[in-house]
Length: 178
Image 1 (cartoon, rainbow, N blue to C red):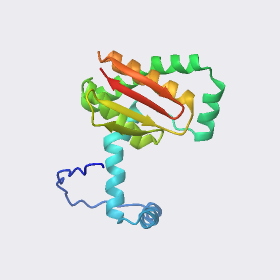
Image 2: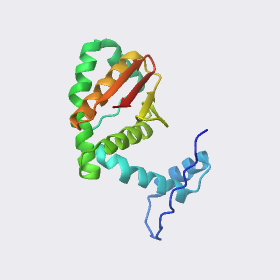
Image 3: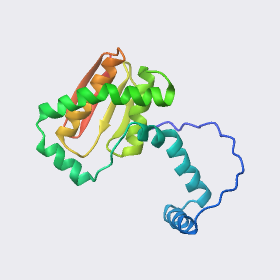
Image 4: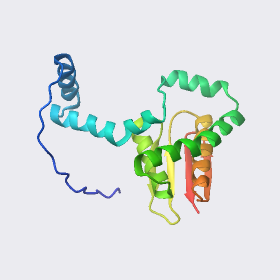
């Protein structure tokens, strides 16, 4: 059973903004679909941009359709995928950490993994209440995606001086911090 965490309430402030009528119409439609107020939706969108997206944009991230992404994975060899993860993991994660938190650390790598999961939807993050810390990244994109993530995060943790043990499965990657 997952324990409910109560976050401290953030202070809010009143501001007035002028919004294009077409944008407002889209916000109202999306708020209705999500069954939240326009105010809540706007706050969520702004928070996502400030907390995550602006940092990702600085790194030059690219969005492509899931079908195109899966096709790219299918056409690459496991060795090429492993190499791509090993090369990009340390540089992408470190640049993100420096951009957002100002320093590289193992706790910040874990924050990156959680944020990346929630923003991209490419995997789900779960953490076992165990020692040593064990996280599992589950997804539905097959073994080659698991191979990429394992290489990517192994290289990022190694760059930060953290030894890990990785287990790769068809739809999951297990990472145990040693």
